[in-house]
Amino acid sequence: MTNTSLTGKAFPEGFLWGGATAANQIEGKWNVDGKGPSIQDVMPVGISGAPTEEPTQDNLKLEAIDFYSRYAQDIALFAEMGFKVFRFSIAWSRIFPNGDETEPNEAGLAFYDRVLDECEKYGIEPLVTISHYETPLHLAKAYDGWTDRRLIGFYERYARTLFERFGNRVTYWLTFNEINSVLHAPLMSGGIWTPKEQLSKTQLYQAIHNELVASASATKIAREVAPNAKIGCMILAMPTYPLTPDPDDVWAAKLIEHDNYAFGDIHVRGSYPGYYLRKLRELGVELDITDEDREILKNTVDFVSFSYYMSVCETADPSKRVEGRGNIMGGVQNPTLEVSEWGWSIDPVGLRVVLNDFWERWQVPLFIVENGLGAMDKLTEVDGVKTVEDGYRTAYLRDHLIQVREAIEDGVDLLGYTWWGPIDLVSASTAELSKRYGFVYVDRNNDGSGSLERYRKQSFYAYKEIIESNGASL
Ligand code: BGP
Image (cartoon, rainbow, N blue to C red; front, side):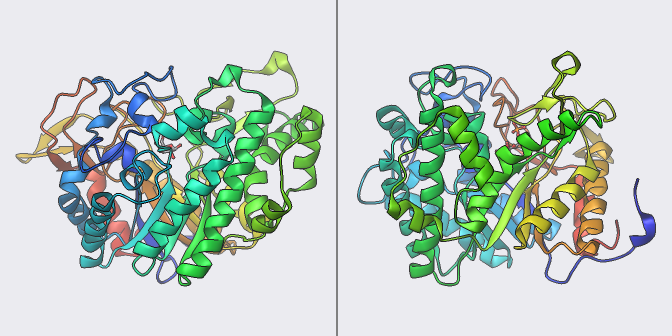
């Protein structure tokens, strides 16, 4: 059901419209200017297969879309669409190539100064993710990633370096991308080298604890060295509906929601909720939590950000389970929804549900920092100009934004919306280029061929118009 009564209503003044990316999916130049390898450089098939020992040429992320060389041109395209905000991540291994050094790599820092120069040129607000699935490879191999609490110290040094260097230029920061995804993708999300099947629950939940402490510690450091910074956590949001009205299905769905809510609860409230402690007890997990950890966790966030692509269902009845495909965590297929070419359910109303749930639960400003449609695009020519006729992408964008406007009308305090990814990039879960999200087409293919030229798709003009009217044209 779409409430059309809001047609023509603009979004709040100052609403931050823009797009979101991650270093490993756009930058390329994986070993240039002192950058060390990250886990992504050995994940040629994303999370759909095992990592390689060393970076291999078939890994599209090594060159990605070469944003490292073309950032000025790309940011100019974002400015042309009218972006107010650009979300990008800093590659940890550009700043600390191995992750455990004591001195940062100046050439890495200088690159992000150049990116910020371009943003400032157009009055685009940067939104910086400190860690987006890019743990330095050395930390994964030598420490088993976040299972080792020494990573807290390495991350603190990295975060402090960023706040000191960029704190006067960047207001909005996210500590970890989709922090809850570590439950499902321990290597990509937690830099954990031990294969998922061999990882014990204690190792996994200790890694989560270590990340949560590191996140809160970054907030504490920011308060000291960059007092104007606003720090947010970032959650993979995937509302879980009961498959049927059977109360057992309702409770099964609630348990999945708890798994994800826990990360927001801890970031916003500063301590572990009762349902989470119960889960740890039932799993027989005893965590190493110090008194100092408990104090650090009290450094709570200024806002909650999240990605939203889809919803799922859950059932307590194994005979009714039909597994759907989806963004990292998947779930039971919702029989009422259409799916994308990659099998992800398309559910604009689910975005309104998430916005209302999160707002009611946490009462801190929210930020939609990812939402988008991955599709097979066909480059074509209209009036002699190369473009993509991607009405399906514009429809997805509009349908979701209409629900966002409804949620704002419901009273949700929302800072902004960044589309994932405004320019074609390498996908995270499958490491391919044919899964295109962009308003800008990049001529590069799964086999690595292509000129890297950029072309405006038709959705480019649609988003431009939406931004220009501050949403009133929806
Ligand atoms: C999120 C990640 C992104 C991004 C997006 C789309 O989980 O934060 O990095 O890639 O999903 O997923 P994919 O690239 O697998 O299509």
